[in-house]
Image (cartoon, protein in one colour):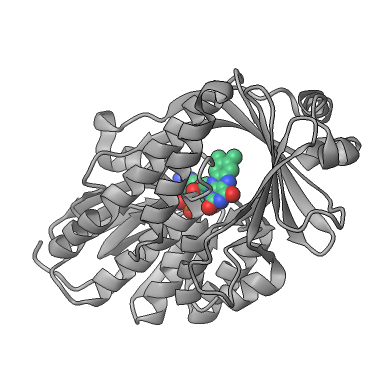
Length: 378
Ligand SMILES: Cc1cc2nc3c(=O)[nH]c(=O)nc-3n(C[C@H](O)[C@H](O)[C@H](O)COP(=O)(O)OP(=O)(O)OC[C@H]3O[C@@H](n4cnc5c(N)ncnc54)[C@H](O)[C@@H]3O)c2cc1C
């Protein structure tokens, strides 16, 4: 590459990965633009569980206090049998020390608002309702054509456009790896939170796991992992009844709140896909981060954490002033094994979940090993 200095970056996709990267790059003086295909830039979906590594990354972005103030931090997970009998209380590891919670739950739109306001404050330019139509590159730069009819040149294009990444397709063409359907779906709904739900509660049924996570003083989200799911979720109008049906065997707090699920827009049903792009995640001056490179299922609740970590590591390397090829190479060395661990172990946990009665101990061990490995700094 003839010019190693990165002065101007285009990020495709304004989700967790793209927005956090834009914020960091703009703050260190690299002019950064985001194109986001949604006409209204924001996050849909219900809640998100932010594990220790995600909280650590948010602290480095200077956003942890705001996230904890607008979400709910907790340090305990309580496990129940399907009928609501207490099995165990597990104290979660407080990665950031005893003053900080181990985990936080928050609404996805709230997390997005916090990230996007910080990015806009830093001076990031965002074009919503815009995507790419073409990408061409040579040793000196990348030229892109956008759906708004404009064209522009950049030193680097970052594909942060999620698991169905268009940038991945443009960079790899026929060699693009395909995401794998795991045969499960996750159903989620935001519900009123009973005062008894003080941390994450998980309930284990035959092949079905259900949990609730606090989001705010009086709100929580419920998730349900459905085995033998179809890759096509039912029509939205049928989702509340189907989710209540899947929950019908569960007791305890699940039985208490189940009837709150009545409206189609309350229910998010998502088939689970997994994808790990083989290294390297870059071609010349185009690189993939977040789910575009490593789309993981929620068994470890670490997809958001590793997306944020990608942004921290990539921005640190681009700020170092090293040759671009060296920076991208170093990025791969620092990110690949860690992201592979999350994707592979989540797939393994998904397999075991489908036969929960045979693999309960294996799953607990693999979860603990994964959390211990991811506690190591990036
Ligand atoms: C059911 C489920 C539950 C999960 N729960 C958790 C959890 O509790 N905790 C956790 O940490 N992780 C969780 N994850 C994983 C987490 O949601 C993802 O890892 C994370 O959202 C990845 O962020 P991202 O920015 O890489 O991608 P995305 O969030 O997918 O964002 C991509 C962005 O790019 C935009 N875009 C797409 N295509 C284009 C295009 N062509 N042009 C321009 N813009 C485009 C999209 O509109 C979007 O805004 C879960 C995942 C699933 C499936």
